[in-house]
Length: 149
Image (tube, rainbow, N blue to C red; front, side, top):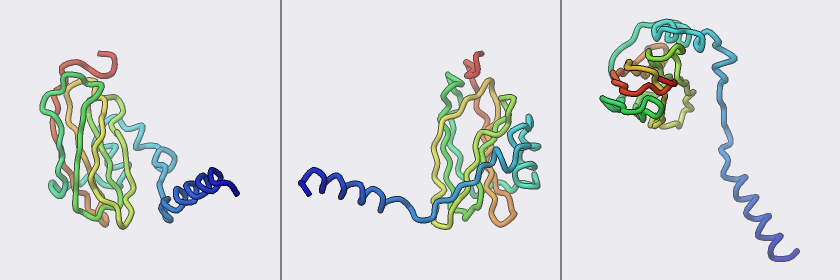
């Protein structure tokens, strides 16, 4: 075996060995289709978690007070809660649900993403911890709509 083949094979084996052994993800669009059809945040939360009774706290949400461009609004949130599922909702677009994550036992609750908002609205993050829902919300004022407005 020549050196190039040996190095290529070694790098391939090293890359495969770094893949986590227990990856799991739920396709919420398939398992909970009503979540994605909901136009109101309360409806989407109830469709996702079975209840819309929220307890404020446990999540730190960071979003701009004023977003100059609704097409790229940076939001981030973190939590130390051992949540099974975390979902992000907003009330400025026709579809209230932005995204949902399943959390593994060793997962960290520290996320950053960019979302689109058509107009000024409230961003809400909800975490399911053994059936109890924790939330954080923030109003984001949008000056130029991100959905063609």
